[in-house]
Image (cartoon, rainbow, N blue to C red; front, top):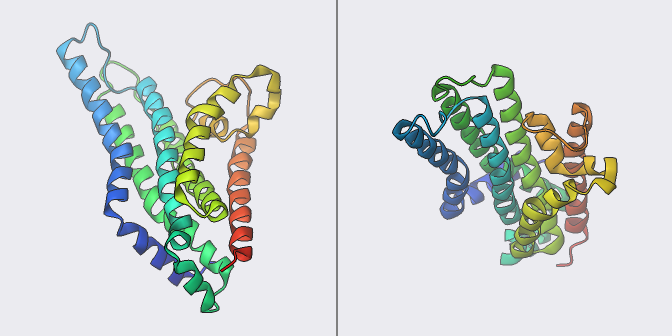
Length: 252
């Protein structure tokens, strides 16, 4: 199902999209640097008015923000990995060679991960280092908080990429996938999380699960950590299943 040669080839194709990679870095690591720099300058200019740029509270705020940005990056990179061959007509040639369609699809999610996960890790490292170095009089994030936050960022990257690859294989185009995922991640999901009449059904929202794993906010619906992990794994498995099915049945 997973061919290392195909995965390496997919990763290489994505890395050659320098504009996309630069945008992904700017939205995550670049945004983290900008936020901490601005807040540090504000604190230095008026310590009485502005709190230190680091500390545990600021770290959690940074992780919450970065989870959203990494989901956006996952949508961009994953949709490119999932739909580029279909949009360019290359998929027809690849399938005609007799290569396994499942193997072709199976290379796209790991290929996207080779781009997204290092970027997520880098952004998490920047947030962690800045939060400790700039804590000042505030309590710095503990090792446990940093591990939880970094793990959640990596899961956000893995989830966002997998969802985008699966939907791109289903739709056959990047545009609708990016628009759909951005709408769900940035607008629809947060609104659904506030609808109390949905009760425990809100536990299936990926954002709620990621927040629980990161330990960054209070939740209107308590979620056990194992349940949160199962939610993330379930969404990724569903995305893989849908994308693999569509790739296998794709007409050429």
